[in-house]
Image (cartoon, rainbow, N blue to C red):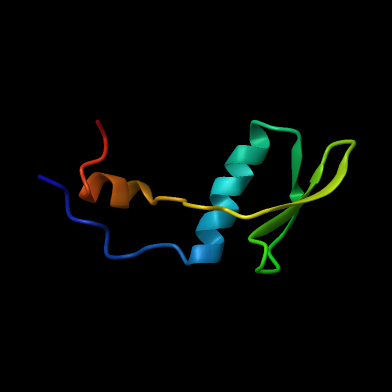
Length: 72
């Protein structure tokens, strides 16, 4: 059985930006260059390669994963 979802959720753009900043930390994308024109969801600088545009297909909130019991 799933867990109750949190009452508060980040706004969509804030959540996307936070997740993308975590992704940037593990890649060559510069987190301080992030813009969110919508569309696309994210534009950022790729170290030494210029600007790239990305569309986030699905970003799940951790509380959503827990509430749907998708942890296994």
